[in-house]
Length: 109
Length: 222
Image (cartoon, rainbow over all chains, first blue to last red; front, side, top):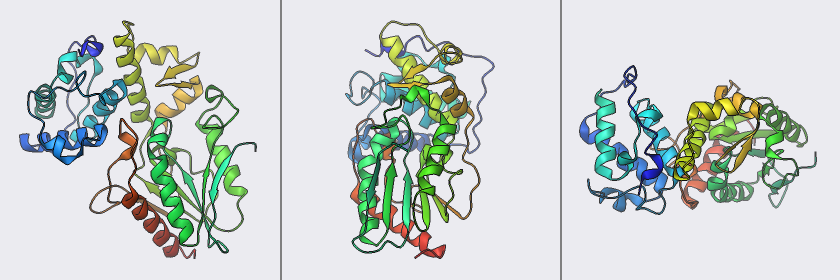
């Protein structure tokens, strides 16, 4: 699963980050969990229970194409980053761990 | 004006009318139940609460692809002008992009947002859905296509004018204005307008109603 967004990919070398506050990794993790709770209606407990291996797109029924789009826009807003849709591939939304790793890369440049 | 208008009246004379401008497109559906709960709470406090359909929305006979933000600004101004007594406009999210042409005694905005991120989210949803269907598209190709024909985004057929106006729209200055967000120093609640599946939050509705009523009194409307 997750093949739906595979070709939203390819990295833009010129793309830079507009991060203003520097996030600690734990801050990015907390922001991302809160964001998923808001968009997917997970509730605090389910959001807190997400592990690196937890499946997202294709596994959570709430995670449809609109939810993927909403998560991306909210990541930009709450983490202070700009995501070029060309740098998104299907793997990013496969698991929570992948999404967190992508977010940390973006936040830390 | 042939559009429907949902109005909840207080049992006696109304102190003022709270004119709600909900979020735009899908976000409006996700918040509707909670907004209507807030309207009921306001009516219990003696306010009339109005939630209008604008052309192209809900029960309107006009097609969404025939309208744009300018049309909505005019239509909302017409709704406000038709209300007797003081009007407080309460807009949420993208509603704040169309609430400045109407005349009102005060404005209240919850989590106002620019048009660009709203458009970007809808474009992204279309690209993701296209990919699943094996169709090649990108934000750029969709925006190019939207220059001369309506574009279908998440079930909404948006006119070229709507797409270009939305991409550039920002909330305009109005006064007196209370702009408020969610959280500890704002309205306690979660951003239901982002939810993949609609929910409702009675406590949030009560907080919205109380904040609007307090702002209305601060502005001398009571």
